[in-house]
Image 1 (cartoon, one colour):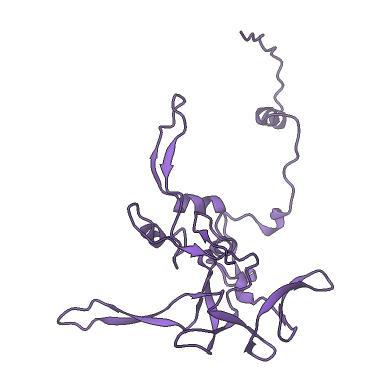
Image 2 (tube, one colour):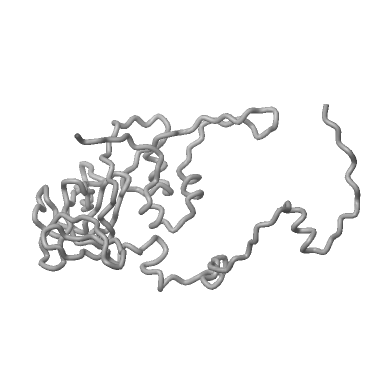
Length: 251
């Protein structure tokens, strides 16, 4: 039995990893609030906002994503087969199983986990005409179309460069790896999986003035204590509270 779920406002983990942005920022960028009560104590917090989003090839924090999810836009319901363990990453070599490029191999250039899609460089392309008129034939642009990972692509075993089903296993050292079912060889995760919007590899990323330094990221700067924020500030500044609070009565 094939299980399906309707697309909702959940952003996939690989999308968040590629963005290199805080999850709270992505949530604010894609949020669409149509009506909200004023920020005053006499009002109960009520709001009307979009609860389900359409995920396409555009990233959730872009203007193109907002245009695809404009209010009043009617789209057909999309059902996505849930995948418990995602096995396709940017930089993987895959073989196309359908279409005019069936049997050809290519490198994954983009992963859209919300739709179980991958885009392969130079394969499964579509020609689109822009600016066509009576006096102008238009401009033809070629763009790669997404492919489903469930039945339209297959990972290539690097040992013999042939497609194979894979499964996740653990090594003797306890490391989780992808293994080819046909040959039993490990299919390593490519370096391209580390690539984000900001850098190709972590080693080449240059820290800016506002970034937390790598040496300070592991330093513990907070120690829990049974005191309020105000009490902590007073202790750091050497302020002693000698006043006796007045008695308070509740009726």
